[in-house]
Length: 376
Image (cartoon, rainbow, N blue to C red; front, side):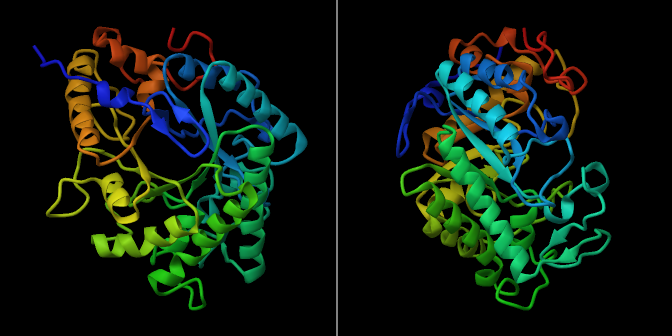
């Protein structure tokens, strides 16, 4: 019989600049393509609210396209610009607030990872810091850089105006901000390329513009990662010193929370320390951090179903490690993805120790997330 663990650290309140969260569990951002034509499906409000009613304190939305012509991943990713799109998001905010939760939009520009043939404007060339390998794109001009920065700022301003509780910026997984950070995709020789100071400049300018648009006390979260797309072995930083060069400028520019996306939250990031990426981000910047990566699951993000036999036991063992790391102060928040897709009331299940109720994550079953039967 698997040893019981105490989930109390997950359910301690946390004070942010303008509100308090009742617990540390966050619905992590997950692209679901809920928006044919860029306008969010009305059923999405219930999808998000159900996770709040199930106990998640904060929702980070699926990635949303900022108002730049080639920011979109596909034509089904929701826009975060335009009257109709913002009205749909306002409805989501109101429903999540009615359920007692808080919500941030994740603002996104995909750069060279844009799936051009699946967008509404496939004739428009992708943009990126540099022309790289098999990805057709054009290097960004200074005007392009200014336009993208302005689009991030305008989206953040809109988020505050329609009632969101903070904003999240996607700076990870090989998308545009991360493309500037990574030497393999940033081969520029101007002020935005070369040294770490230069490679971080674009992202820092985005954060500064967003901070100016939302004001000093509105929470700002930045997603970071070492891995890129399906390149799970890649690293931005091979040492804590290299990571510090990248993260401290973001912290000084106005980031309040670093959302550290990992495949396996329990693995140490660098030799000689048990801390993961979230732990190092907190140590190096002094900011709040969130750990994301296979929380409550037996394996990393790989599309493999957790078996019915192993779902309960493995989840408990996994969560015991999570709680131990949180209790020693490595990170402040926990982002939950697939387990909240399969179990909208996952926080309540964990709080009550009712692990026999856990449904295993099944990609086939969760493909149509707007179906009312999911998670019932």
